[in-house]
Length: 176
Image (cartoon, rainbow, N blue to C red):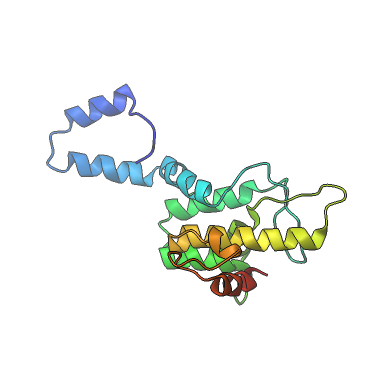
């Protein structure tokens, strides 16, 4: 649950506890540990394509830049540790910054939409990268929340794909 092996003291305490709920006590202790959110949040951060060194292109009202991307990571870890309901977890990451009277925490949660590949390369065409950012966010949303790939729909319809090209770009319009 916490991703860490038990210490010798923890093993000895468990073995010495002869109560019928000894195992449940260990589980409760591990669920209350901050390491629980670190362990399980790591998997989510992989899905969100998080890295501490991403270079964010910021717009008005954005709350993260490349120097404090850790805020989103900490939000994810804390969300797991406080057992945030999945519907709220989803809403805050996809549109936390759009909620009425959004808190700083809710705005940070929308950092999910900032964990995409970006550039600050001289000579880069800004409009071209805005399209690439929308595409990346749409593909990531499809993989993470819909459990399906959407990459083929960027270019064409395919009889075996769950999304048509029109549906892909309709969804991409949300991120634009």
